[in-house]
Every structure is written in structure tokens, then in C-alpha cells.
Image (cartoon, rainbow, N blue to C red; front, top):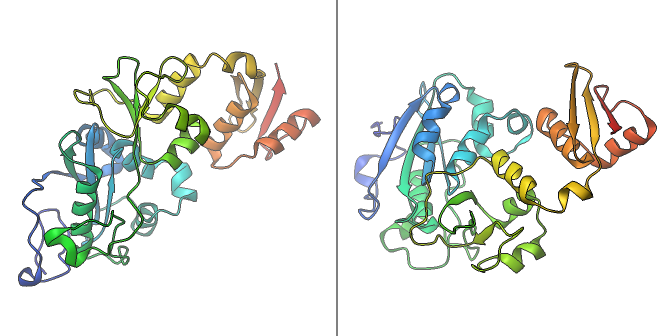
Length: 304
């Protein structure tokens, strides 16, 4: 089989391969040992739309994916809570092949010049062309619009592609974070859908007098200073005027590591346990706090 410039085998011979759409010029970077080169991943992903290809070099088998918030998406594959619990194909890929002999190819596109649909077209191209036992479902979801030369290898669905949510700082220039979808926004930013609908795409209305949310990127936006999700949540905590009075300060003891933490609410303590172990039920944790008992043979939580 012919080798592609991305280090993976083509699934088809050159004569039967569809031409790559000329409107999508590629900038790409091959990253060897991605687990230990996460700073390099950040360098090429941050502020860009990305199609990424994981390749197991001994066999050439690969997995194709795409993301608007590419830094968080790609780096999340290395987090313990995802490696043990997540069922995404990227996690399955690393579970099957490990981290050794893995190459990550980052194909990156300027956020201001290319749309989410453009990225899905490119993703569909590589899913179709690259040899992958994991990408057996050879289509991506796209709006039902004419797809010109790429139509033969994309299964059109009535389901639209996910709508990204851009989180802006008060100046409406700096993009703080990009959520891939409303669902990820609700789950990760911990804001009710009804609240989002009140603020979404309303430029003169700011949540906590700070955050503006938009489904479209503003002209002149600064994408060079994106925050991590943890940094965004910390910022949200600092500007939310309700949080300090709403929460009840608690002390959390990690009996395994012999470390003591202080949190302004039980939910924050539960979030720390979830981040550390991959699971935590807040209601059960509250019961252990009331009964002065140990949670999961490891955690002791007390009111301050």
C-alpha cells in the first residue's frame, strides 16, 4: 500500500482515490510520542480548527477525528478519568495500542477562515481514504446541503453538525474558551440550558456582567489566549457573585494521600473527587458528611 504523508496507509489504490478538495489547503504537523509532547500539541491546536489522525506506526492503522476546541479535545485523551471511563473511539484506540509507537498528526485550519462544516468535510475525506479498523462507520454528520465533489463518500444526514459556543471576555474580542456543543457547555460550564438561551447571541447581555456567549465568531476575535477548562471554571467562580454566599465551606481529607483540602461547597469537593478517581455521587458524599463516615474508604468530608 502507498504511504500517505501523514504516516498511515491509504485504504485504496491511488487511481481509485478521490482528489483532495483544492479549497482546503493543509497545514499539518506530525507529533511523535504525543503523550510526552503535549506542549507541542498545544502549539499547533490552540486557536485553530483541527482534524487529527492517531496512527499506530507498526501497522499504519489509524483513527480520524475533528474538533473546534482542539486543545481540550486532544489533550483530554491523556487524562486518567477519560482513559478509564470514556467510550470515545480515541480512548479505545489508545486502550488497544497504548502510547508507544503512536503518532499524532494535527491538520490545522485558521478559525476565522474555515467553518465547522469545512472541518467535517476534511474529516470525512480522511475517514474515507485512510485504512482504519476503528473508523468502520464511514460518515460524519453534516447539514443536508450540496457537497459537490465530496458527495460520493459522505452519507448525508438530517442531523446538523454540533453548534460551537464561543465564550468571550467583556471586551468582546478575546475568546476565552470554545465549547464543541451546547451539551458540553451545559455539562462542563454547569449552566442550565434556560440560562444559556437568555444570553446566547445577545452581545449586550453578559452573564455575571462578564461572559458573553455566541454561536458565531466575532470579526477581529483574539484566539491566541484561550484558557483551559479548569482555568475557565476558576474564572467563573471568581466572578460569580452568588457562589460565596450559596456554598457551605467544607474540609476534605484524602486519607490515602494524607492531604487535606478546603472547598467553599460540597459540590466543589465532589468535583475534586470526580477529577481524581473518575466517579463521585454528591448525594452519597453528603450522607457521609452528615454521618461522619468515610466515603469510598478514602475520603473524609466535614463542615468548616
